[in-house]
Each structure stands twice: as structure tokens, then as C-alpha cells.
Length: 314
Image (cartoon, rainbow, N blue to C red; front, side, top):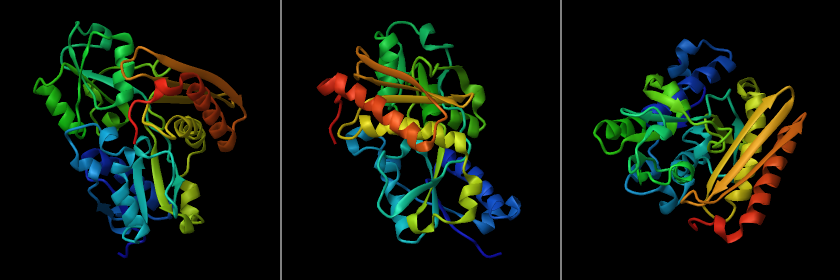
């Protein structure tokens, strides 16, 4: 059976699990039996620099592009035909010659609280250790629990769960979407309310990337989920405004009900002591107006926060 296209992905269990799901969706959209997905659209495993760095935050080593550059190079060089990414790992700006072409239906965007001892952040005693490598999660946790000790925790989902079980920390925060996709939902003790602490822009969504010259393929439109696209257009608009020149603790959460989009945007100082928030609704949204709303709310926060917003410069 001849392969129709090759899909580039990172090699972690989460990456291959979620890419396998998209792989089957692509093969179905191409009009073929998803039982033959591995033959018709084989996965090509690509190790990124972000996978190799385990001793520090990615924002200290170069930012989100560390999870995407090698895959995007393979796409530009023709080694793969499409790539699948976790959207929250994608930088705000696109690469010349490449386009984010389709966004399948979004999984749960919330952060999950995982612990062997406690049910929630509120249950943790003073001085307890919370593991995360996310500046946003750190800042949001410290905003309500400044007495906690933040432990820098890198690695894939399995590695982080193993470190939790080994006692490196008392609890960890992970994306609920990844745990659910991997069948690990039983580890979740509770959820962080995104109406109070917005998630990373695009969290829970997957992005299919292709060469810009290949955008007119019919299967792309069949894979695309319009409400997901509206939500992430708004959230990533805020990301563009807030990460244009610096690395910041940024959250953005969009919902859609009765043809109205609601966007909640937040930026924080790393210690969580200062939070800037904006929330606004938009009737009959389009991807363009949703993105514009995100840009406007993000820029409003930048204008108010000024130099206080800068955490790490690239």
C-alpha cells in the first residue's frame, strides 16, 4: 500500500498518541479506511531540541520554537508532508513557507491538579512543593498560594508522573488534554478553573501544519473544526500582543455560546503578586474579528503593565 503523505511528530508517548488520532482523521478525510492509517500516512518521529533540554525552563533556553524547529525544517525540506503539534507549543508567529492549515476539534483546555496526597491547591500545606516548568502555572499558583515552593519540573508526562511518585514534589500541574488523550485521566484529582486562571493560549488544541503551497488540498477543510479555530484565533491574538518582544506569564481562554465568543486574557508577574486581566465578549465572531479581539485585549494589558510584564528577554 503506497503512502499518500508522511506526518512529522515528536516522539513522546503523548505526541505519538495525539498524532495517531490526527493521522486517523487525515486518512478518513482523504476517503480511506483509518485501519490502514499507518500505511497511508506513516508517522516520522523527529527529536527536537526541546526534547533534549531537561535541566531548565525552555524560556531560558530559547523559547517555544525549541519544540518545533526540527519538525518545521523537515517539512520545508520535503522529508515530511504535514506536521502535528500541540498548539500551545507553537510560537505566535508563523514560519515563512509554512502554514497552520487545520485545527481538529479541541480537547479539554483546562489545567489538571495531580497529587498522591492532596485534592487541590487549597489542600496543600504551607511550604509544600508544586512541580511545574510553566511560568504561567507558577505565577497563577503563587497568586493564591504564595507559601508554596515551586519545583522546576521538566520532561514528558510519564517522566513528570514518575517524579511525583518518587517524591520530588507534592503535586504537579499538567494539561488535562494530554492526560485524557493518554488514558491517564484517573490521575487527575481536580481541575483549575479557567474562568479564574486562564490556560495557555491554544491549550488542548492540536495544529496541523503544512507547506503554504499545499493549502488547497480538500482533506484539510474536512479536518478543520470551526469553533476550535474561533477560540484559538482569539487566544493566539492575545499571545501575539503579549509575547511580541518578551517572554511572559500569559493565559488566554475563549468560549463560544449562542454565537457569542467570550475571551479572558491574563498576564502575571512571575511571583504572582501582580495580575492584569481583561474579559470581553464578541457577537457573531469570525476568525479575523476573534484574532483582533485578542490582539486588542493583549495590547491593553501591555499598555497598562509596561516594563513590569517583562520576565525573560529572548
